[in-house]
Image 1 (spheres, rainbow, N blue to C red):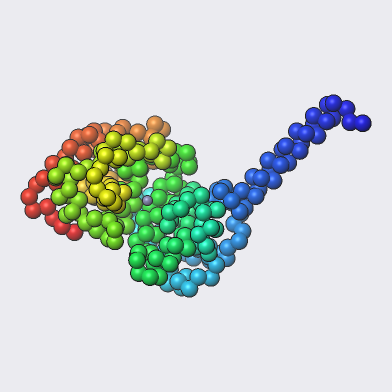
Image 2: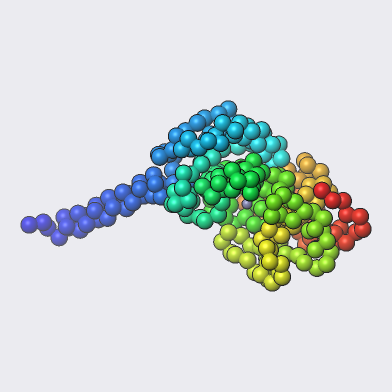
Length: 286
Ligand SMILES: [Zn+2]
């Protein structure tokens, strides 16, 4: 018969083994996949400055532009990828959901970009421009490579999405309203206060919820893209990149603090200046 202590050890060892087996499963095939150092179930194609994981989809030979996208990302953000960005072309939406946990067309996690079957289908049918969307997602991927996942989840979404929209030149493309439309709406009082757009953790509040537009997410993305473009053109590329670097590196993850440090202004001041800009006549259109 087993002694009591021996039994306890046996149960504990069993629990640890079960936990480890689950962790290995989740890393290999499930929700922890974006964090797994080992990739299974995909063919791997390594290029000069990026890696594609795929199932032999027909558009793969057309993806050589990704090399230029990587260069553009590094130039725009003023920071380099720590490791080659990895793009995963899923074979089904269930595979995409299983690995990313999301239902979106694309998701960037832990510096890896996942492309759903739906996104590939939409691109084939001409409903979306794959290159533009991948440029957007790779902006998230680049920032993620410079911070922990926890820290990225605490980043203000207005800045994360605004930077990606501006970097990808996505304002005015597809469902996203053009700069002139955004300026007109903001001048008329339709505006999502950046702090109301929250973080991945905190969710939306205030003006993000009360906005009367039907496709408000698309409007917010364009609005934040316009705000980032406004900052970048007001202060110049180098100051803007210094601001991004400060946001990524500062210990407190305080965008307000980074505004003060780099621009010498508060976020509230810059928001007021942006709103004022939209009221000026003859706003340039893109
Ligand atoms: Zn995004």
